[in-house]
Image (cartoon, rainbow, N blue to C red; front, side, top):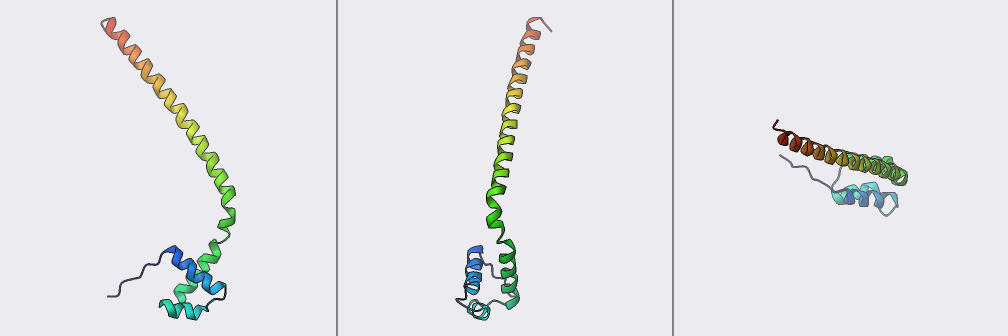
Length: 101
């Protein structure tokens, strides 16, 4: 039984760029790395499809940072509410034990 080879993303990007920049042809890349042309074509299509995401990152990071800040504020508020509830509970418990209840 033949085992599947696993290629890391850096390797995939390197060989796709070799073909896109004209350093090597797709056939040369496939032959050199013993890849099928279908696998190479799939990697290339995925590379080209996801390339615009590189330029969209700053806007989405701003949205992510805003969401993180909002969640941190929520955690802070809930932490304060929990501390207040603990203090109130301990005060009520101590009052009830003093009164013999």
